[in-house]
Image (cartoon, rainbow, N blue to C red; front, side):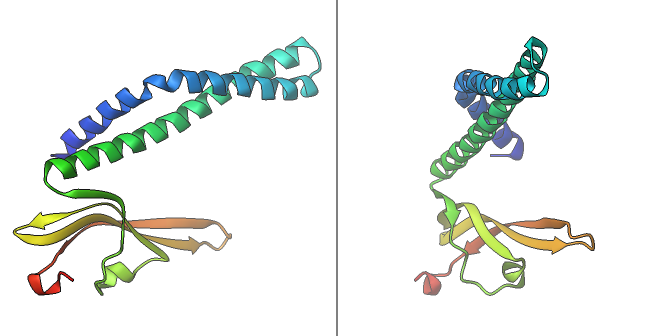
Length: 165
């Protein structure tokens, strides 16, 4: 499956899974309207403050709910497509994968390291594992602002017969 095909499949899953989003967006709009109507009333007592707060709250709450639903649906779609790819190719998919017990410099870098979106199967007749490896490195600048840098790799571990245990 090419990158374009994978992206198209994820987008199709997203459209399928997001059909029920309108209820969550409406709930977010109602909750946002209620909360910000209170603050609008406190800021400018009367119908104008109440209405302005409710209108802003409805927009903010609805947008926040939509963003959360979209992020969750996109992740679920990504997992479904990755699992389908693994199954269709005779592999077993795992969302979280153990770090390989291999001593390579890039596997030691970063403050935090993890593997995700992995699969196990056979490659060229040998047991193999594939995964997305991420190394996170934190840094702080002279003004005290913290940032995290992500180094991402795709790893393939091909095991010979004597090292399969």
